[in-house]
Length: 110
Image (tube, rainbow, N blue to C red; front, side, top):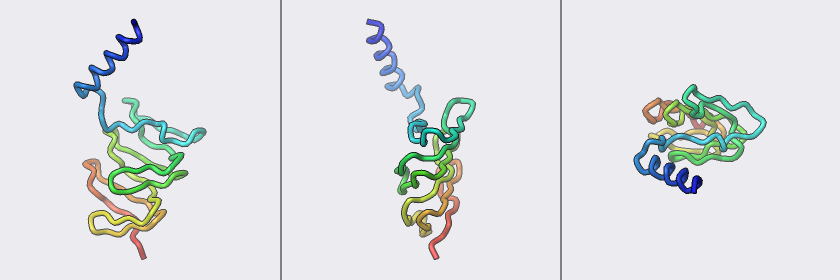
């Protein structure tokens, strides 16, 4: 019965949006590498264990990724050549975003 109450409580929280929807779970991080969290417990940075699809791009596994406290991506290393906001960004180059999620910069394709 207690397990049922816990599950029901979790569903109520999710239904009303109390749990932040865009928080990134640290399970994306490579085990054995440093994981940095904000005081709130949300993921700040780590090394990805696998490629990670986010927005209109794929971040490369075995490379660093960082997030703003609200879960928006700050920086990562691209796993493939990507065009964002009219800029063609190099495969395995870094890309960064402003806190509002807008494209900031990347390593441009030659």
